[in-house]
Amino acid sequence: MTHLWPQPIDPLHVLPISALVAALPLILLLVLLGILRRSAWLSAACALAAALLVAGSVWRMPMRLALASASFGFAYGLWPIMWIVLAAIWLYNLATDTGSFDLLRRWVEEHASGNAAVQAVLVAFCFGALLEGTAGFGAPVAIAAFLLVALGADARRAVTAALIANTTPVAFGALGIPIVALAGVTGLDLGKLSAMVGRQLPLLSLILPAYLVCVLAGWKGLKQAWPATLVSGGAFAVVQFTVSNLWGPYAPDILASVASIGALVLLLRFWRPDSGRRGGAPTPEIRTPLSAAERIRAWLPWAALSAVMIAWSYFKLFDRRAVKLPVPVLHNAVFISLYGKAYAAIYTFQPLAAGTAALAAMLLTALLLRATPRQVARSGLKTARQLWRPALTVGLIVALAYLYNYSGLTYTLGAALAGLGRFFPFASGFLGWLACFMTGSDTSSNLLFGNLQVAAAHQIHVSPILLAATNSSGAVTGKMISPQNICIGVTTVGLIGREGEVLRTTFWHSIVLAGLLSALALAQAHVLAWMVP
Image (cartoon, rainbow, N blue to C red; front, side, top):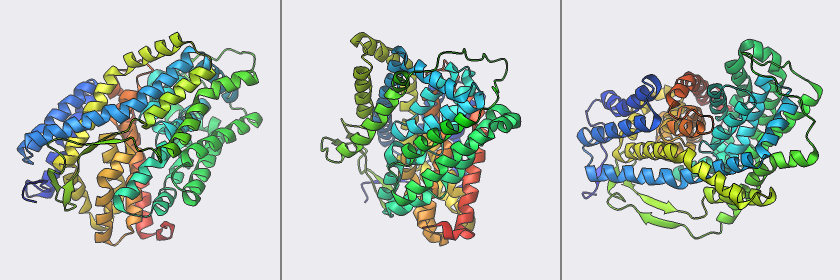
């Protein structure tokens, strides 16, 4: 192993101080973005530069390895992450250009009676969860936020609602990939991990619609809309728990979101809230109810996306077209001291990635909606103009995350938290929160800290299933403050360049939800151990 560069866990020989220094680039990112209101791409670039400086000067990482790891992350940020975002936003733009999205807006108006709180629950929580189960990576926030703006919401409030709602579905997003990745990296039983996450997140799912309404409309709004929050959250939580425990991680989001939409629509046939519109927001104009054909046209793009993504996941099982390219200079050149093994660096180019499935759904939608080639091309050009700056930001953020991983900065932060002993299960959720903040991905969070959670579990004699699952559950609470998620989410509502304002709005909500999840994990470790499979 002498030819490998070993990651130092405690380069300053006092672990808390080493962890503080490791956190400095992240603190810089938060200050620039959330306090000084700098643009997301500039904040990410400054944080990356600071991380290169810290990794090279304190962790003594050779600069060739540091630059190679950042380049690896930047490439991954563009493909597959931005590829699926591009295809999903292209689908949304096509739906807008063909009038389908306006029909969806009218469908929501019909069923939510103009009540802004109920609309937020139906769009941000229920519909957003459906999008998270199929696309993810910020696209659900962008699409749900635009729909809320079209319904009369303020742009910043719409993005805030979409980000807060984009939490509990995340662990089972994209057909359960985060849990599958967690099982792969830890070697733990996939069914038990799915069940454990399914015994944590449904508790948040139950209260999340009510929490969302309180944030947007206060207690008065909750008094008006509490039946909707109870029914939508309850239906989602029950199905999420049942499917994750009896079937596995593949379909909880899709089935739970469909159940939640159905339950809420059924409730609204017998119960009507007050209009509940705030600040003089315009009351939607009264129109003739949608016909059956118009309802089908309204939901067709999103039904096509769900169907294609599910079918694609089975098709990919038999596909052998992935091209695996060892990253020059970096592959197996770093030794992970915490885990005692070389760090592989293989860039996998998968032509049939999830973004390709979303693109196929867009083309299928264009065919079914009889869109002209000009409409398809125009919506594609509009998407490219919307996403070039978010693509740069995402590339820089993922480059920062990969540099943290390969330099060992991340493992220093994790090792410092792992020293909490009996109270580590509380920190366990915040580890997932931290990793998702950096990477914007529950999957990446699990790949990053999954083994660390298992190692800590053995040291403090707690179930490794519990702590590994808590990493994934905790990560969902960091999604709403991830710069990657925010910079994509603002693309459709005219807030590009104002990502810091959104971060300041969601930050403390993220802390509150992460604290609730972490407290639950601590209780499950020492008091509610019967909940652990």
